[in-house]
Length: 92
Image 1 (cartoon, rainbow, N blue to C red):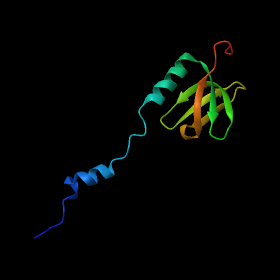
Image 2 (image 1 turned 90 degrees about the vertical axis):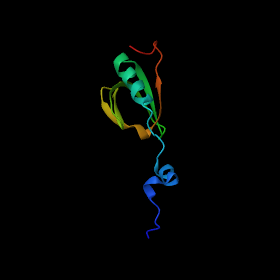
Image 3 (image 1 turned 90 degrees about the horizontal axis):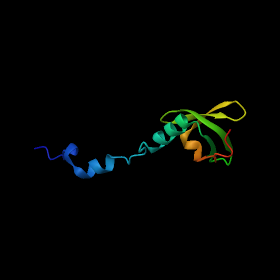
């Protein structure tokens, strides 16, 4: 007789194998809003740097910001601490 446990039916193994959901989709919705509204933002990086410009493109893992200086920079979402919208008075 085979006394091995059927691992597919074991609920403990199933719970252990499930990973927590990392992406709720809220970031994509927020970035889409920033792209469509063309609002100027300040991106604060984990390194302490700040970039100012407009979000031009976004993807699941990265986004592009058009800087005030005219350069376009791609950033990974994992390198960003947070994004702050600039006040309407400072936008042109």
